[in-house]
Amino acid sequence: MAALASVDDYKARYGEPADSARTEVLLQDASDLMLAAFEDRIGEYTEGACPAFDRAAPAVCCLLVNRVLSAPSAMAGATQYSQGAGIYTASVTYGSALGEMYLGKSDLRRLGLTGQALGSLTPLERGGVTE
Image (cartoon, rainbow, N blue to C red; front, side, top):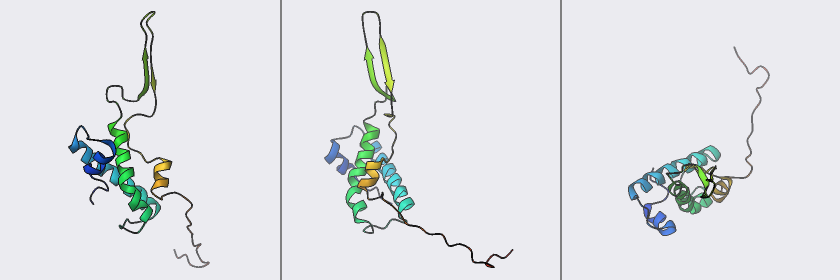
């Protein structure tokens, strides 16, 4: 299946990417992640079946890719770095900025993939089990 967003969609939201080929691959990865979440929650994806998902998909797809592309590669995982001079002090704080691709609660809400779901289990009828 084609990606839910194109490199042009990404450019319109976040500007020109440094590497268009990598951005295209990441957009496909983000699309696969979003479709897996859709299939887990709703079932097989068909365009038009969930209008909220279809409207938000390009924006969320680009957002996921931007999270990956904006993570610094030299200090992977570092969210804060400070350095001193007199008496030599330096500190690094590590957080969740690992450049991982993930769908957060707000992303899922935006895609219409949150809320309650109703399911049912049918108990076995007496005498319905044959061995």
